[in-house]
Length: 285
Image 1 (cartoon, helix red, strand yellow):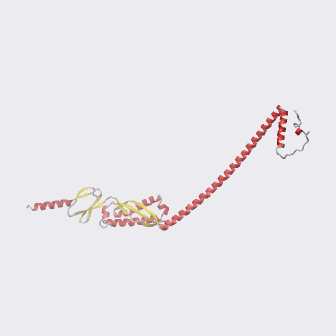
Image 2: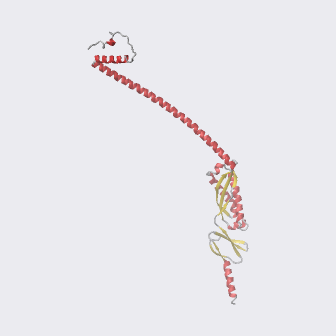
Image 3: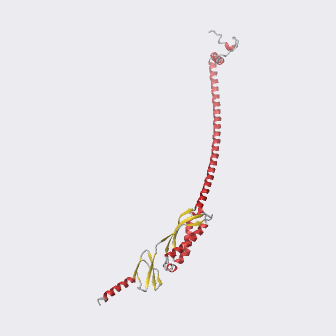
């Protein structure tokens, strides 16, 4: 009897442990009865099962990242690019996931999902040019791929939460083509700038020449006006001086005439001494 009691206690403990199971916050669970799924809606916490008749299989309910190896894609203009991308997915229907993947084999799920996304991505790249797949259209393309994937992976009991391209690299052939095109575009742009520069230079030169002609004309006009005003003022001064003392004015004008006539050392004048030109030379007073 003493031996039987410990045995019963051990059996009771084992049966008790086999009768409970815990579902974590990050898990989802399936309960089987002799290999048949009888429940798949467990919430996190402590749950019970019938020992030896029921068994429980748990799956991670968190997002799973499928990091795809870089693959070559062909764009609409037949240019090959190497695309590095990843997918985030999770189990949405554990029963369907279990039955469609041969007992919840994650390798099978990843393989099927990768093939679907690879084909969808190839189709989307084939419909777009290189500039489009690296522009804002890439976000729309990713959303389209995610929507199409979810329409088909529902049979696997999973859902795709995100598809993202990490990097797009050009192949050597495409790089050479892109660099050649960029060089051609830069050359055309530089030639256009030079042409515009020459055109602008000619415009500036023509405008400068026009302004020079205008300034010279205005300067000559002002100089002529000032000379005229000066001559008029000089004439006025001479006239006033003549009116005040005509004799002195005549004498002053004669001296200016003498200075102008005898300015050189070799100047010779043959004039009658009685001419009016020498009338101030004969005056003794």
